[in-house]
Image (tube, rainbow, N blue to C red):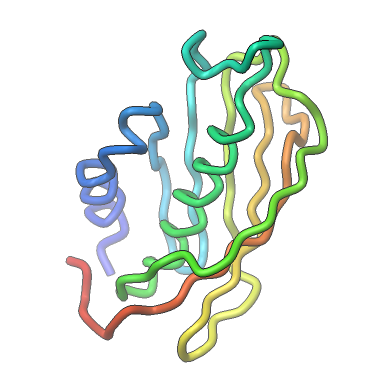
Length: 136
């Protein structure tokens, strides 16, 4: 699997991720990492990074790790724990690591940290393979 190409293709084809500003920076087997530069437009009324942005970032990161096996996937379940508010932060880094790869379901632990390595959220995202079709 050409992970650099997979990373580039997923960045090019992820219209919503691009709108938000989420960049996939690394994919390898069972793992992915994304980054986000925090902008004013992504904050909620109290000035914290919006929880929906964090949830989306987790889904994009987990999905990127899931496709590292070369098959198309779709999200079937996700949970997230918001541990600290994203107040006065400049950057978020998200990492997804594989917990289980089954025949149909793939499960990932996803953690998001700010630029000071403070853990903001943790979650579990589950994906289902859609086919044996190779992505690239």
